[in-house]
Image 1 (spheres, rainbow, N blue to C red):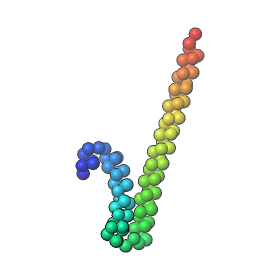
Image 2: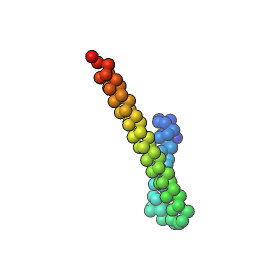
Image 3: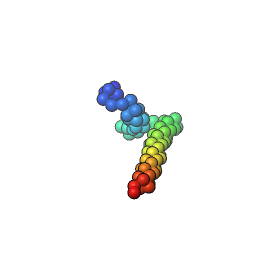
Image 4: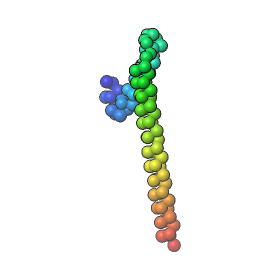
Length: 84
């Protein structure tokens, strides 16, 4: 609850996505819980979703950076053509 009030809900969602598999792994290690098929599948899907989110954000930032570079190059080119 404190994380949501101190930061954005997006950050809280990311932290929950990270802490869910971590809590499963720690429960297996310290509480000696049984690690069966459904837990393994849930763990893999959670990690896959988190990795997909990070990859998507990285790809989006790369595209935005390329757009900004192209716009800057075009503005620079326009200024060079306009200069006497």
